[in-house]
Image (cartoon, rainbow over all chains, first blue to last red; front, side, top):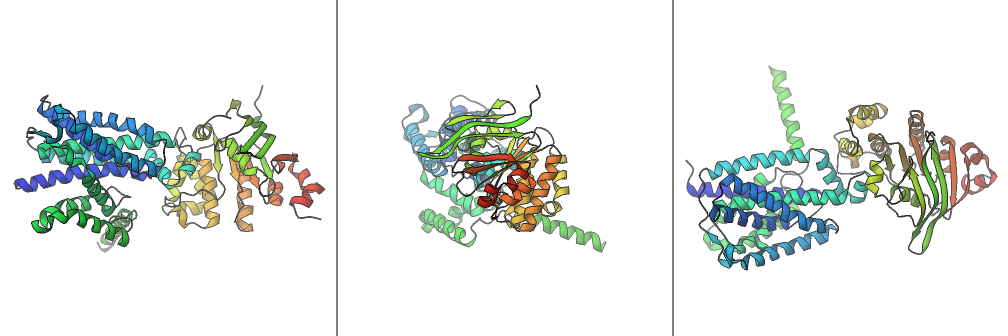
Length: 290
Length: 238
């Protein structure tokens, strides 16, 4: 049996893997979308409210969070699809501050005190792993589909993508909506794991963590998060308490160092292909010696 | 009545702000022919191609493709309706693989693009050899082959080529044009802009000579090639 702190840690990792995947989808289309964190707050609060006050079961809460996240992500996405990448980055950051202050002022969501006593879910770790597997498989399919290629084409050269017949606006809205769903689901998992939720969580420091995890792990493949999330999420827990308050600084330093040493992150675009190649070769060798 | 002209441009004018880049141009491209737009820098060739694609909005006139008015359609709709383009400078998605570039060319292909992919690979085996390589690692000539192949992947009715011979070695220029003639024989319709008037008129069926945004001459390519005016201005003859 895993210790309870280890279980907590692993569930947080699952939540953050889903969250960073959410940020990854629009990134392929060349958009630095900070709204994933906004949707994490939406999903987290929805799940907390539905579970505690309405008594919904776990999976219904997750589903509801995904739907609400999709809707609340879709609406601003309609606006972002008309702007350029840099405007999206700045404006979507504003969404985070808006949702924080909205929640602070809603009494039924607990205001600044947040929601406490969210029901405990048995087997939450198992459920979280299931969610990671399902969403990961979905992301893999998306990345290797026509739509995934279209997103990458938009990220590389939007004008060229248009002349290939890709509707850039529609694809932008699509990617931001998918991102929002991932964000909302991760928020729900986070809420069930913390069992309390308050608006301060979903602030600038969370955004910095997400971006660090995305850039350190590698923003061109979906595999980087499996290294960066456990590492960076574990960091504050492993280092001595005396330097714990410097976490933000450490994150910043790691981000800068990685970007200088390995601009594409730990798992680069080519690495999965090269590993596959290596496996194929060693298999051939093995077959040859038999 | 049988629809013979694939593309019909009537009275088209395009402005960049107050500057007129294309003035009241008429142009027709018929089924299964290669039409060349020739002229010097700034003659309006690329502007005309961009206007057909809807990248540059026309201020006046109409563009009709297969009987449908496409003047006000968005670029992606125009491409979806069966016009594809090989942009000037090839427009490679350099960080994506050769295969991904080709697959993106088939973005609007309704059915299975497999047969078309095989066809392209049989014409340009080098692309098949390099399909997992990044497009940016190909040589200039190979990139042009890829750009043309990508434009064919969606099995379009009309292909627009903007300066296909730009920055290519003479050997590649002939190879590219021979390939276009081959595609024409299979029923493809082609409109291309070209500064290399000699080559363009050698392989095209008809030509339009553009100067400062207006058509100064048009007719069968062989006639234009021997026309003294054209010879003097564009072919470097005496």
